[in-house]
Length: 51
Image (tube, rainbow, N blue to C red):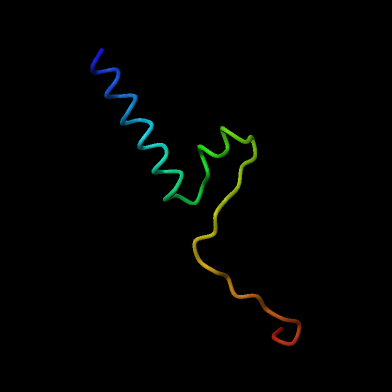
């Protein structure tokens, strides 16, 4: 019983940490049903005059 309880605690912690630290939203997708991707770096936008 203690092994299963420890496994569940570690598993939930790892899943929540991965959701926060990763680009993908795993836990949020399970809760809301909408998958989103977080951009970690800002991409510069180009205007029409830069082309």
